Length: 513
Image 1 (cartoon, helix red, strand yellow):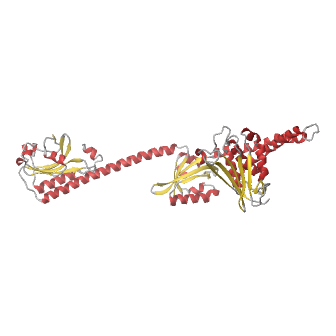
Image 2 (cartoon, rainbow, N blue to C red):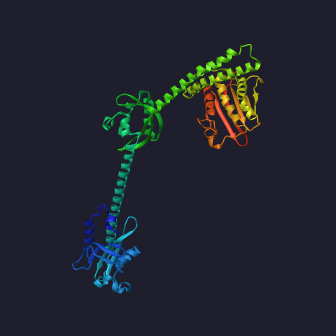
Image 3 (cartoon, rainbow, N blue to C red):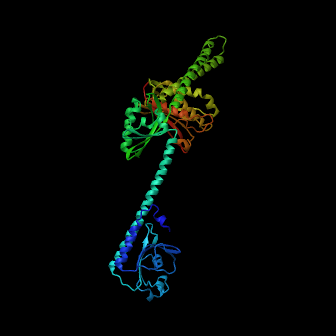
């Protein structure tokens, strides 16, 4: 065991060890007092205080061959040899050859519990020491072991500091090379910014931003929510979820960003580590997509108006028979339906954005459901199915069922749900649709089929792009139905099991027609 491994940072004062040995030898009157280090198969004398001509000396190393100190090492306890010549086991000890018949040695332990060596005294005659000498050696043992503890604590501290420095260096490298803006905010002010953060705010150097209030670089429209978030992370010390907001650069230009933050202690102060991603390009692409969709809708309407108008012009011709007129009406209705779909796509977009203004009226759901069944007749025929409609009303009417809403929204909502039911029905089965008054001011529409929604998607039913993996499915049918129900002050619900099949329901405000 190398002393360098025990004390790599040289915190042990070995002059203190020498003073201890000098005091011990003077008080005890022994020929020597020594500190040894046992490192099999050798024993080394580290420090010694001895009379002139004593056979042991500092730096000496000898093979372990029944030395007194070897017994201390093996037993890990105090060893007292009053007169080696009177004990059979010690007659051949190397020390007796030098006339050292007395020995008192204490084990020295490292903080790990491993034995280091001994603190010991030798004499050339039988000696009976007082308890005070024994106590003194025990106290000196504790002092030396305290030195070992100090060396170990220093070693651990230095290693921790080195690990921390290395970790900080790696962390800073990662932070500085991050393509996203990362900065530290303490007491509401910038404390550190990586290169990407400097670019985000239009700065060339940290000195342009460090120490400045963070709120000054947030668009005024976001001041209230940013201050609330800053207060929350400073007081609750919890992670803040992502938020889209607008920053102001040094030159005053605006930039869209997605921001999140986690609490951090920086330079002895509590603050926040903020992650910001420039989403300006994404916003531009989203706006471009919206613009293209609006242009596409507008451009589709022009030829569609021609398709709708042509049957209207031909249908009054006297040369047409009933079958031809029926086909022209079907073309006209299909064109009108397509026109409604185009208009509805814009409506759904407005609902999704929370920008739609509902103009409710009294809507009879019964003719709408019949119309949907007719429009989906080919699909119904392919599975040999049909709708069975039951009305549960206190008024006892089976000819109408009125709710508060908008006719076009009701058609789209119910069409999506009925189409899903038909696509998942067993061949030859009917699809029950029930219309019932749940309370005086509420109405409920339920659509049922025997199929079960797979458990893998049940937790996400009604979310965007969640589908049963149909080849042509997008998962938008149920999603749009839920949006529309909410927009008409209603509620979407569902249940599904292998025993009872699947039932989706919409609750809407009730009217009397």
